[in-house]
Amino acid sequence: MPPLTTLTDDERLFRDSVYEFADREIRPLVRDMDEHAKLAPALIDKLFALGVMGIEIPDSYGGGGATFFHSVLAVEALSRVDPSIGVMVDVQNTLVINALLRWGNEEIKSRYLPKMASSLIGGYALSEAGSGSDAFALTTRARECDGEWRLTGRKLWITNGNEAGLFIVFANIDPEAGYRGITAFLVERGFAGFSVGKKEDKLGIRASSTCELLFEDCRVPKANVLGEVGKGYKVAIETLNEGRIGIGAQMVGLAQGALDAAIHYTKERKQFGKAIADFQGVQFQIARAATDVEAARLMVYNAARLRDAGAPFLKEAAMCKIFSSEVAERVSSLAVNLFGGYGFVKDYPVEKFFRDAKIGQIYEGTSNLQLQTIAKQLLG
Ligand SMILES: Cc1cc2nc3c(=O)[nH]c(=O)nc-3n(C[C@H](O)[C@H](O)[C@H](O)COP(=O)(O)OP(=O)(O)OC[C@H]3O[C@@H](n4cnc5c(N)ncnc54)[C@H](O)[C@@H]3O)c2cc1C
Image (cartoon, rainbow, N blue to C red; front, side, top):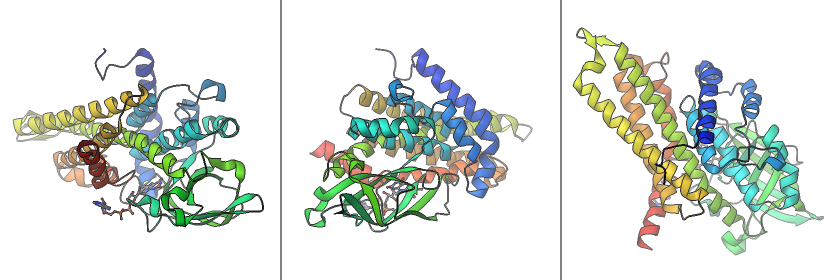
């Protein structure tokens, strides 16, 4: 067996090409996108051209025909430069495309996958104002009317809300049936009765749009049910179980970006007549941070490789997400400290990494919910 972090030639070339792209095309835009809380529109076409918007879509539909592990590598490489771009690519691949591949029938796949590989961005709409951790308490309703579905309700916090043309929307067709009424619908941005509401003004990942979605008797064709009617809870749970490995990758990339910046800066910055990296106190802090990042990466890669191998990965996915997000917070906080006063201002990248890190402990299941999943696996 090769070591866990040893990449195949194909994986290495792919990862390096994404990182080079991030360095060349994204890095110069990071500060401006953060300040204006807006993704540079030109980046979107370039991300499609790079091939990171349809990584697992089979060649026959125009995608990359690669693995979930490749998606993890892409999210990590992008997040090393900008975790906002990392999450856009993550939602596209590990949630939306993943769900379409797994639950879509042939008609749905041939209708949407070629577009998703070339120009269409996806969003994943589960959360509502009153239902976050308790996701299946959602109150968006779907009723049958004149041979189609009509959706009414509001979704909150939806990543890619500003850019997406297609949303997987979870709504309940029969509240009496509880979670067994939940159904996944594919809603196009242009469907009558659909609109995008308020965009959130956030602490971190500010270039990633997070929006409210409104459904006012929104008309959805019968053919746009993803999976079976009443089985949307399965679509949601199983997709999120995998998606959280992608958030682990986002957090590993973020932590690596903060660590790289800290190493570079401490070798340059002089105090007491020498580089601050020459002080053993600083060296030990950097060594500990690098150890944390290595451990988090091993956990993320292991969970992703288990998933690709068809082996159980639920516990490992939850563990990698909680651990990586804590590492991202610790390492980015240390990076701010090591930059001193310069760490606290926007001229340097570390204060942004510190702000961006916080989201890892919140979305795709808060840390408490990850602990609940791990405990359930351990204790039955
Ligand atoms: C930037 C951003 C992007 C997002 N993107 C998306 C998206 O694309 N699609 C989507 O559907 N959602 C998205 N979300 C929503 C996100 O998944 C939820 O915010 C998250 O699941 C937490 O739900 P909540 O905010 O309602 O918090 P709550 O569920 O109200 O949790 C509040 C606190 O209570 C704790 N808690 C709750 N229940 C328990 C329990 N049983 N035991 C112990 N502690 C508990 C939580 O851990 C947390 O600390 C996004 C959120 C943000 C901020």
